[in-house]
View (cartoon, rainbow, N blue to C red):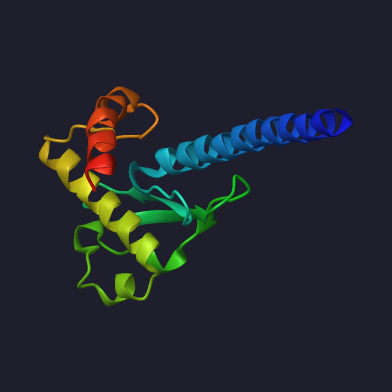
Amino acid sequence: MEQAFIIGGIVITAYILQIVFGMKQLKNFNQVYSELRKKGRVAIGRRAGKVQSGTIVMFAVDRRGHVLDARKMQGVTVLARFKPMPTYVGKDIHYFDNYDPMIRKENKLLRIAIEDAREVFLRTEAGNYKDVPKAVPLFNLGAQLSHIPARIKMFFSK
């Protein structure tokens, strides 16, 4: 009985710490975004991580598409913070793709986030960007529950 209270206390403490550090991370995101927004338009690219590290990149871009400032946040935990990427300053965001040797040097997750930022920027520039939320398994619970009878049938038919 006493062990259950100890484990419960640890779980509650971990949950509260998760909330506090998540709020600090969100505050850091908002602060960096507002800094970049003062310099120009901001192109944001993301690569969500489930088990691997999540990655977010932000580029402050001028009217011609040249990067004025670049930041990245990459990490598994809520302790990740934005770091500058000085090699991208002065480059044209229109050319941030797999063929650029500078992009090829980056890790796979960062490349995906940079290409996402480029794609969002190009679509916004063309005037046909719509933010489509990616499906989250927890929120798609109704669809998952509807598949349970078919899964049970397949399990017993084997």
